[in-house]
Length: 176
Image 1 (cartoon, helix red, strand yellow):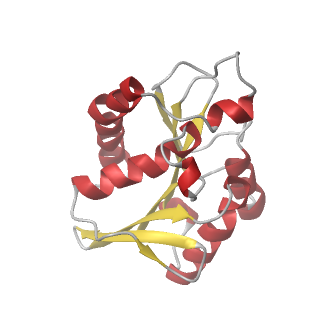
Image 2 (tube, helix red, strand yellow):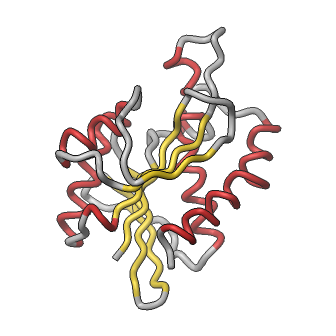
Image 3 (tube, helix red, strand yellow):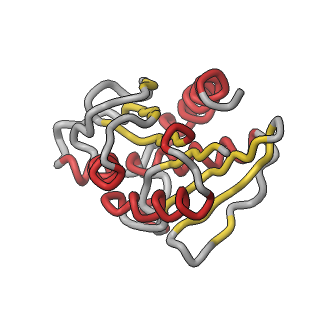
């Protein structure tokens, strides 16, 4: 079993914001393959599943604030008995230009509260991650910037170039 977690904030006011870029990506991923519709649960998550080459792949959107993402991840990994080696977390980063993507099996948390919460509660930095840079506009406070919405051109760039590129990266590193 494989688990792909997109970090974000679940409420409608955060739809299409920079902090929710990975909820957007999970929707793109689900529609690119034969994933079922995302479904609610009583465990603070919504998930979508697909079986590929006899292996179940689960997409997880935590239904908590970003800094409590670990609650959903731990409850799901415990429920399905998924090891940390089968987890990949996708998240946003503001430290470089828009739309750069990076994959690593280990990273420090940097500024990201969702990643900090996962590291603290799993007790390790050693889990796969993909991050996309959403840039930081110095005219805004950081929290205001990451909660701002993408403009039309940025969404087009994500859908036409960045999400397909990320999908290719996932296929080579995680979905084999």
